[in-house]
Length: 239
Image 1 (cartoon, one colour):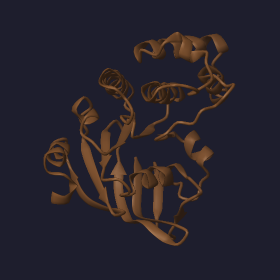
Image 2 (spheres, rainbow, N blue to C red; image 1 turned 180 degrees about the vertical axis):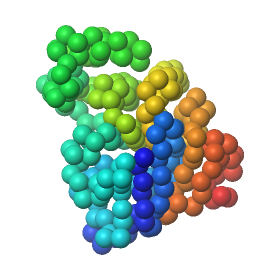
Image 3 (spheres, rainbow, N blue to C red; image 1 turned 90 degrees about the vertical axis):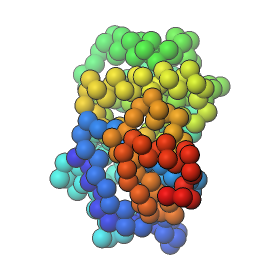
């Protein structure tokens, strides 16, 4: 269980998140929603350990009862937390296989075993073979970049997967493919999936167990899978 208690976060003395408390339970799908600039990405990046954000002393982030509030991002990743960025970076000269081979070096995969696993998941995500041999994200479309983020998450096998705007810049067909893969992946592996989004469109394919709405750095509402439909109909102003 990943538990957030009284999380208050600042950047250059400006408070971005205020007294956030919530719990992410194993094997569940969550959605974090809110308007632009509400603090959704800040929450995810703080959970991942981004040093750009200052965390108040009273704040607490625990993973399976282990306090991780002051841990570095690499240690949090090794404990099973994964964050997909809103805008995945280009890495010239490095393929996704080379990146994953380095990242999985401690997991005991041979190069052949890892290649088979990458190829299998790439096929499920409908990622063309030629993208796997090109420099990561260089010249890729939004949908291609987001599919490769999901591929990395599946290979790295974290327990808590945070996907920040995985639906941004993705066409309808790619969105369905990503959602169907994630739904199957969570069901088969009992992972915890947290989808950060402005919109309801991916949640139509991937219904969340709980929806957390953040506005002005605070949680203003929690609800079930029906809440995104209400937001789509009436907007955030009427919550």
